[in-house]
Image (cartoon, rainbow, N blue to C red; front, side):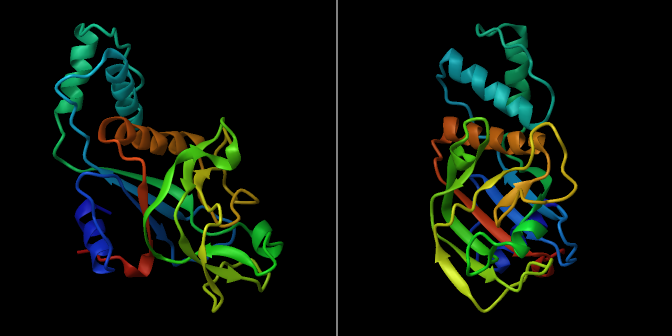
Length: 243
């Protein structure tokens, strides 16, 4: 899906679209395949411009984050504006005004393990589609400093699915609050095919590499735009405007 269609889809549901912040948009698939990473996370942003004056350490970190987003490998930055630094700067500044659009496989629903044995007696957590402004910030999933993630810091709305079957469903039991429903990864150094117990209602990447790429975008905007809160929008696939 190209960015203009995604913008229409978010705005068409009454959501905000940001030109100077990161747009994080989850798409929940209409095909109910139990325990599969068959949803998508779209990340759309414009590279933040570098300030006129930037210290060497910030420059190195900015370029390394930007390069890792595109999986180009880390150019060795010399820290003194040598040839490699100039090449990296020229690349970074070459496309500041166009949307960058990344797409990853995720799950937006719990795995079969958590659907059948929910942590909460009310039922498994299934995030309700909608836009949650400034509801996330960078941190560590469950406090594990080896697991960077976007941590829920604002209230979201969820369904409670308590029929203990393999399908995540929108129910009549709705709650709003802080649930620790983070955006994180599954297992490091391994691509997951099955969700298993890796999601109890969080939004979860099936590869660690994709998680780190998402966090590179987050750190880029934290460093250059001082953006410390991030908005997440969840849409149903049926809500997409494709033209």
